[in-house]
Image (cartoon, rainbow, N blue to C red):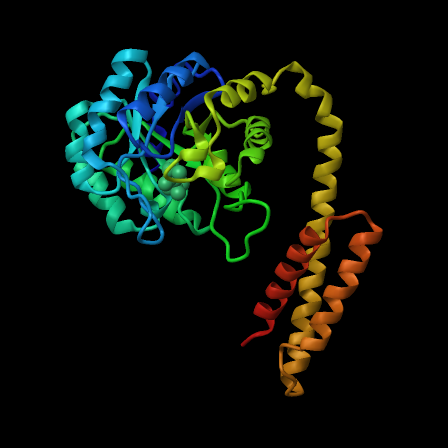
Length: 353
Ligand code: PEP
Ligand code: MN
């Protein structure tokens, strides 16, 4: 499998490797007029790849489910008129069979589809023998193996050019983002597949216009290769994902204002900080090891004396103390909470028979 993964070609997707590679266009193809007018303005903003969903996966029934194959000709016209490459979403072998008639330059697999290994396998089988590059969105849930499983299914089917689109993860609570970024998951994907192209989709992640620019900048600072940004000629009238679509003019401004930082010689200047961090990480691990050793000893005591492993009052006390200290020490409370929860969970695991 390792050799196969290293075959994943970056260049075919990144068209030259300069950052950011930008894909823009509406959430959905709605009409010929909407698609062409959006495309002309998006091309003026310097974009080279145009997106539009033909078949729209909607979580609930009753929403706009896309124009389907009827929009294929419009996409072809976009390519002919603007010279941009075209990309659309496929979720079934039938979508692939239909869309291949217009020779799409790229295809993407949506978040709902990546969640389903049967669907991904069916797509991988349908792509056998074709050479179209595929971008795989992260699955809805934060199960990284569903994402890497999809990459491996495609690679096994011989799809040579595979990229990733990070669009955030569904959570029960909705905070400021429509889909929680959980940046560590795409970072781990990059660690597993170092040469893979990684794009960020700030539109589905943020879910609102105002969040597009800051998320794009964050993605650039995390060394993402590119961005997929939903852009509509008239977002207020969009038939899907209206709150998160921006105009081509707004897109142009966002792209112009992006600061692209590249690795350079100056990286050497952080060497001293890094040594200090390495030492601190080492200390943290030693402290954790001592902490778990004590947990094991308490576990043995509880067992001998027939005391239940989980003590709700004690757990609550640990959390409250940590939260109080977090404030005093200028640490983010949610961050501290997640660490204390993870440590407690590990202690409980060690103490259970
Ligand atoms: C889309 O790109 O319009 C889409 C449906 O995205 P996702 O699969 O990320 O929800
Ligand atoms: Mn959308």
